[in-house]
Amino acid sequence: MYNSGKIITGLIIFVGLVATPFFYNSGKTSVKPEPGIDTPAIRQLAEKQCVEPREFMKANHMQLLNDWRDSAVRDGSRIYVNSQGKQFTISLQNTCMHCHSNKAEFCDKCHTYANVKPYCWNCHIAPKENKT
Image (cartoon, rainbow, N blue to C red; front, side, top):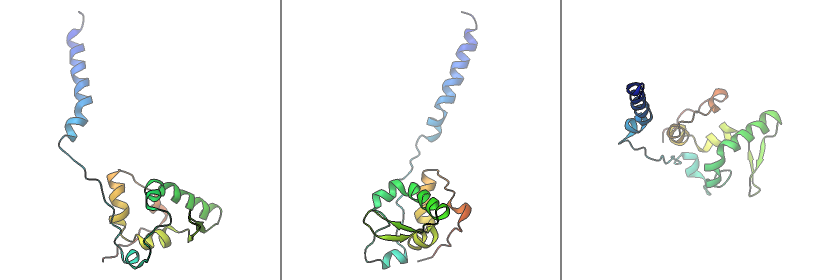
């Protein structure tokens, strides 16, 4: 067989490269983050509910924020009517971050876990952490 040494060497290198991520991450576990919702504003709420139900917000907050951005910036509409008919002001800083003032515990925990780098803070000023 011609060049069998080169072929076997190439196969060993290929298998080594493909298996590297598995060896690199073996033994490491990452704990699913539990975002902290214990803030002074949330504690004062009689009904602890976001603009939409929790499961909706977990799955769709990115799309909701994009829709809010488009609605506020492009259409000039600053009122959001949720699925229960309640009205909220469309504002990341004054609506969302008012309750979720703990950006490090609420936003950053999950975004770091998911290795997502949202561009919210390219335009908005990141809130200062309120120590409770």
